[in-house]
Amino acid sequence: MKEEKEVEQVARVFRNMGADEQVAKRMAGQLVKRAEQKAEENKTSKISELQKLLELSVYGAQGLLKPDEKGDF
Image 1 (cartoon, rainbow, N blue to C red):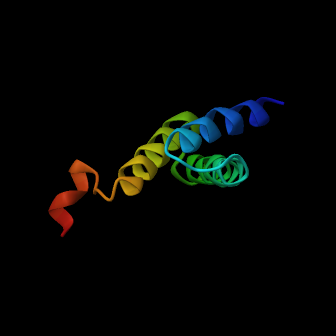
Image 2 (cartoon, rainbow, N blue to C red):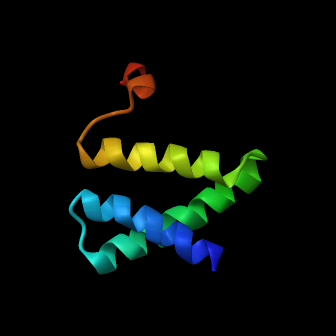
Image 3 (spheres, rainbow, N blue to C red):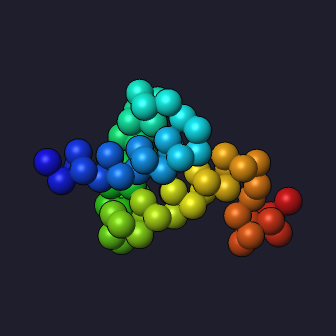
């Protein structure tokens, strides 16, 4: 049940960025699963990994690079 709530909250972010309901839920589900994987790999919390992935998604949707990654190009 908790994961469903997380997916719904993340899907709301994608809907606010213009995605339709079905696409937003699919992307949110993928993002939550990836956050779980990264948390396990990096020995960090799922919340912190989800935050990083959401920030990356928001910047990407705007066609921007995260400020800390601009120096890589």
